[in-house]
Image 1 (spheres, rainbow, N blue to C red):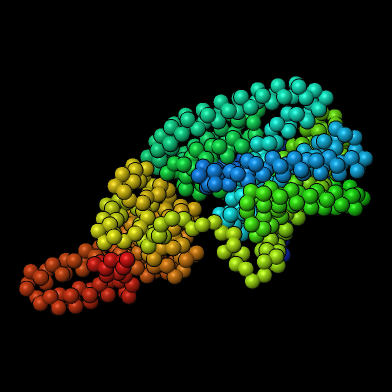
Image 2: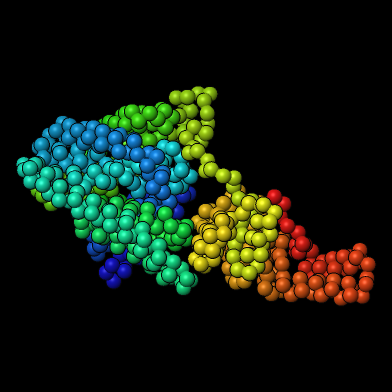
Length: 568
């Protein structure tokens, strides 16, 4: 079946490896790499017809990962870690490259081959580090932000290194080529920031008005990969271009929905990357050269730990921040594979050199998640009796109090609810899929987020974890059920006020655990009973009692007082 059959084999193997890793309490990354070894060309079992095609698809995983990172990572946050990223990273890369060169020479490699090993050793794994940070919830911590900034800078530094290394005998020609690429890069980045910052939000607004989730996803993916392709054509990193595209969309109101849509694609293509890494491993070669591989990997990782430590500490950060950064960035990364491939292509690395470098790279990538998980314990050992891990490393909390109410939908009902909350000075965040409603809310000074209210990413951006009540003011029964299921699965004690368009939907919401349901026909019945009794001059106390009795009979024990308002 060609590529279709290969993808089927990869996905099934990845699922088996991921399931095993999850049962053993290990990162999914390790399971994916083991799956790649199992279906690789060296094991003699099920193999792929064209493994190189999977490797090409895996490159998209790195780009999508950095694209999603750009959506979350604002320019303000990038500037905040600029000192260590801009000044510390070149120092770290230079020290690690010199270390890799020295190890290559100790192994008896010729100078050019050792230089390529130095280039491979200088860079860390963006994909591994970001996966581990996301899984542990440490992306927004101070060391998390520093590591991300340094990884981005490493990706930028990889470009001049890949230009200069093939021209070790002609550095003047390499410098000229580097200057041309740098000029192209500056022009391209300027165009993207200036033109893209004006055109892309307008394009996203138009697509948002059509309310086509499918077209929105295609548009987001096209922008991310399209810009990445443009930067690659200009001689820059494909992944760096994707990050720039994410930054541009991330500064718009469409960032949360874009992130929610792109995450499944990112995870699938990221899985392909790690499986492709496992496919590079020859178990027989590893066993026959195990001592050399382990010694080289250990020497490089220890040296990189020291280099990152010096860079972070030199930027003025405490040891409790430098420790997790050093452990996270001590391994080799996906660009190391590029260096090895280019070294072989230019005839400077033999097949044996390449096999050893690849084995060292994969071993360090496997060890990185384990080292990162050990960082909290090491910090506590170094600072006994000091602040807790999260108190020490967490980024400063965002300015402003968290929202008390999350209003989903800004139609007529949601708009009236927002008006009441405004009049009572109750803080809230509104979510709507209509960009015009969101723009009108912003113009009125309201906090509003564009996106599908059923998306966990959008709900998280609305502050669902800190909300006191969620009001689902939507007319779509399917959307309300999906929202209720998503919210209550993660926050079972959170009150949800939902609108049920029919009696069956009321029962469905009750089964989901929603205990505040408003059914328009039932509410109309209660209002009509109240109006008729008031015309007959029935005493107010009797009117209230009868209305409550009808309300109780209709709802069967669940519901919400129509006149009640969430307390501030």
